[in-house]
Length: 293
Image 1 (cartoon, helix red, strand yellow):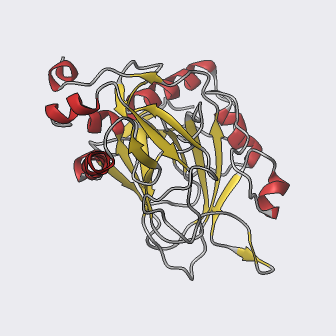
Image 2: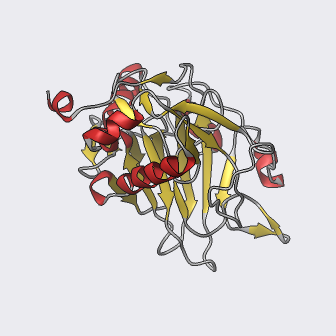
């Protein structure tokens, strides 16, 4: 077997891991090499993998416990695959949608920030993809935090933001969230990663409703500024999917979004997530001077 290669995907975020066949169990040494690459690069990509759901789970289990789906509303096809699986798909069988998030763009978000202990990792495997569009965009939340203006860092230092899940596939939220009906939780805006010790910006356009303790107008204005900073090209990698791609990303230090794609082309990806055994900890405001050392 050839030595594992780690190839950066961009200057912003991500690395491709080569010479690994995920149909086979990882050696301890390979698992730790991949884990360190994940900590260093936030997302890791494996190309040209032909893996079953069980093999996808076996790989994920090297890095944590496979999580049960947080939300209700699973489809028949998902239920047949088990309580851990989410299908990202626009495919319909017998007039019934087999998965979730079938079409359109999605704004930047992390997965499950609206629960007390958000899931740390997402593993998404591509089975069918359109010929164009449908790219997943990843923004590096470490770099976003480190490069905020110093006055903004001071304004949000030590504060929390409310994260909420309140949307469906047909209605993107505009900020008028119904907290009485939908899961929500307050988390630190500056989040400390339990393994790397680095601080990331833990907000997202899709799921962050307010900065706790600020007047509504000030909170909205400041959040819009943070969201705009997250979207800057210097922090973002756009992944163009190919069948057989497996991506594992760290929800503690990244956000992701999706581009639109032709509705008449099939798209099917299989998702599992990993529990996080660590509580969400407040991070120190990251300063450029400290980051450069």
